[in-house]
Amino acid sequence: MKAAWFESFGPAQDVIVVGEQPQPTPEAGQVLVKLHTSGINPSDVKKRAGAFPNLLDDGLVIQNSDGAGVITAVGEGVSDSRIGERVWVYQAQYGRRLGTTAEYVAVDSERAPLLPDAASFAEGACLGIPVMTAHRCVFADGDVAGTTILVTGGAGRVGHYAIQWASQAGAKVIATASTEADADACRSAGADAVVNHRDDDWSAQVLAANDGQPVDRVIDVEFGANLEAVLDMIRIGGTIATYSSTVVPQPQLPFLRMMFMDLTLRMVIVYAMPEDAKQHAIRDIHAALEAGTLQHRVAHELPLAETARANELIEQGGFRGCVVINTA
Ligand SMILES: NC(=O)c1ccc[n+]([C@@H]2O[C@H](COP(=O)([O-])OP(=O)(O)OC[C@H]3O[C@@H](n4cnc5c(N)ncnc54)[C@H](OP(=O)(O)O)[C@@H]3O)[C@@H](O)[C@H]2O)c1
Image (cartoon, rainbow, N blue to C red):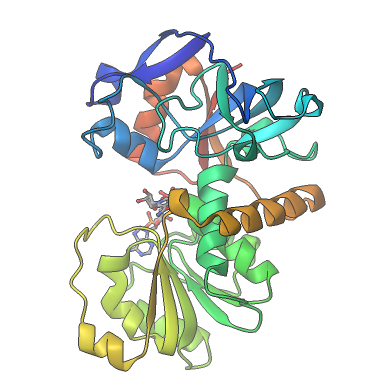
């Protein structure tokens, strides 16, 4: 089968190889998916750049965890009735080497949920990391109906879906964005108010957008950089759910201040979500896709031969939405 892989760490154009690899055979409990799309995310490019030094110890890595396609074969213990199902794939390259930049992937059957006809294969490639991360950030700490939630970076791949989950679940959502176009995207996703996180007084703007009251929860894309500001705008007993801290990778916590605010700090990593949280997300994603209530943004679609370019797009940023590699 055609595939894109790396067997050393480094810049994408230097280490991504596109060529032929053996087609996998589904093992017991697995399905074989003929992929149409592969979704690439920041963690995929960080792995290629060497963020996990032992990643290549057992051999080459076919990139990317997310994708979508059609089941063409099943392993022992999986019903033949799954053959022909349109599915989306998640965590294909988590704890294993062979991901979705390939014509085929063999994954555990539960890692290939049904993709409703209403959703395209490109949209299916956005679900595993962006949509599931957003779902976890919104729902990990209980019902959000009636709460006020701040979503920082609301126009980002994860943030855009976090706004949608939170607002559709009945929360008042204040989002942050740094351009008018991004602010429009946040409002269109369901944000009730948008402030600019590049303004020095953005925490005061959040309070003003909430009638002077602190928010109940914060879903944060830049934990270390934003912490001081967040502490100025979150209520005592509030929850910060954060999924990234790239600008300040080792933040210092003002422990006493946070303790006296009785805050909950929720670290989210989509790969290690508890299994019941994954199943919760999959049920909600299925219902939302069937109902057509999730907005998706596919910013770039590239052929498999341009997998290195897809890596560079994610690294360079400067656009809004998912990057999808067409594998078929
Ligand atoms: N933990 C997990 O499970 C998980 C899952 C998915 C992604 N991630 C990580 O989350 C990060 C974002 O991923 P993504 O795919 O959503 O990226 P993305 O699409 O590039 O979005 C990032 C967003 O953050 C905004 N932003 C940057 N600095 C900010 C700040 N100080 N305050 C508020 N917003 C800020 C950006 O807006 P401006 O450019 O306009 O400032 C942009 O809208 C990456 O580091 C990724 O590795 C983690």
